[in-house]
Image (cartoon, rainbow, N blue to C red):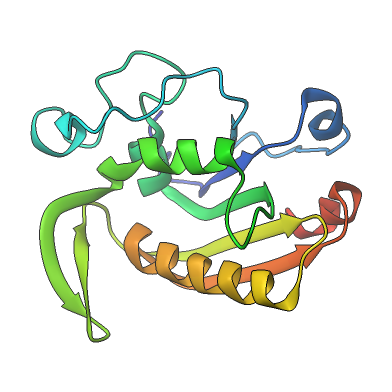
Length: 173
């Protein structure tokens, strides 16, 4: 899906079940929703999205265009159950399939080695975690979101924590 010049494409990656997500009203037609429900193949590590099929996965399923989609999204909103300081397995699998958002070359940023972005830098990565958590898990999750911000090519990362999915509704907009 191509980004229209007169709008900003917003992408939401979430791990809610269908019933929970249907309670959220998403009125904007420029919102793309990726449901991390596991109805897609896991990344097989072939790197064709880097080398042969620039930015697009060779597996023909709902995540074929995940890298290109994320590369055109501002903001990117990730909604995930907090699992030991990281994303739920479904959300992690979606992000794994989006590795084509970067190039297979390296650069030095902030004293660390990172991949070069395939797309221009975007403004906002918003990560919304829900569920019970410890302070240590929240700290780890905040660091993870910051690393994803760097690797996915966003200027700012916002990481917010909620007790349950219903509390997230206002943070999506």
